[in-house]
Length: 415
Image 1 (cartoon, rainbow, N blue to C red):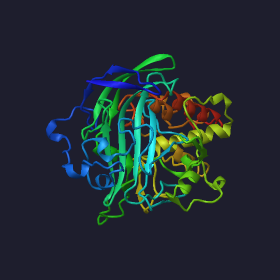
Image 2 (image 1 turned 90 degrees about the vertical axis):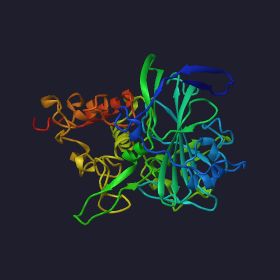
Image 3 (image 1 turned 120 degrees about the vertical axis):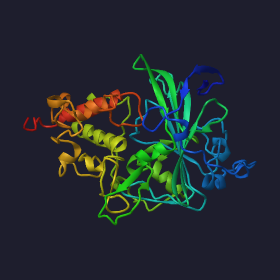
Image 4 (image 1 turned 90 degrees about the horizontal axis):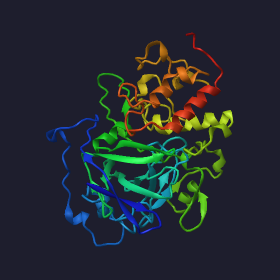
């Protein structure tokens, strides 16, 4: 199969050969009988001649093609020009996904607005849609150059709660709903070297592994279910300026307020706890100790805390992330000074089988002896962390966490 590279600002097209196979939730082949069933859709609802966003389909149907929802002015380009009320946004510290460039958009139905939250994802009204397109640049040093669009993920807040729909761009015409996911062989240039790996488009059901929080059972009669939640659009990642296509630059929270899709934000945006602006081109040597700490806390929060969290400001009491009981809890709003062991400082590395080499998650002042950066720099199933969402090691993220540990007052943790 082939995927075609899209060159920004140019009609020139080239073709990149990609081999595609089924992806299972555990990363291994799945028998056809075990694959999640394709949900029947109503073709009459998915097919619309209107030039407006197809809200009815978004609210009720898992349509075969991304274009059925009419989210973009040009449905062959999911990277710009959102249709209707769609607004682009960006994250000050993005979640890492194999060096992909991500194009994010928020759609809120006319007359509706999200409610501001100090620490959690905004409370979005029914009908809201979060859209994220993943594109791999030919060369990560040139994010405005040639790139391959691989997938578009939708998070839709329907009447019965949030649902996740993955769409795969096999060609440049349209993206297809892929319940069972895909594995795509790709090759990019990073730091002037070729990087070849299997990019994984998730199964629909796989999305729940990161997007749900689980009840902390309070007894045999506690029958509460999991809660599916978005991860990214929190105020701390949006409290910064964004350059919009009309030539204006504005604080993203202010822009959402002015567009009428967000209510309840503090008038003084400087009072909002704000994450670091950390991307791969940040030079760590230019950062102060406080700036490195903020960047590391932001990075762990967006990449790890959806699993490694427990209670605090979750929308309901006695809930935690899937790894909330591991002892490692790295939420941005958790106090590091009060709970250093929750961040892994001198905490026994219970998942480690490295013996004496990595006995603690973080050994202050000794990044080379700390299990946390080792796990981030591993692709082995036993050690790899995060377990999902990456097939490569994030060199710059590992360097940040090592730099953070190096700034800590040396403490061998009694070893």
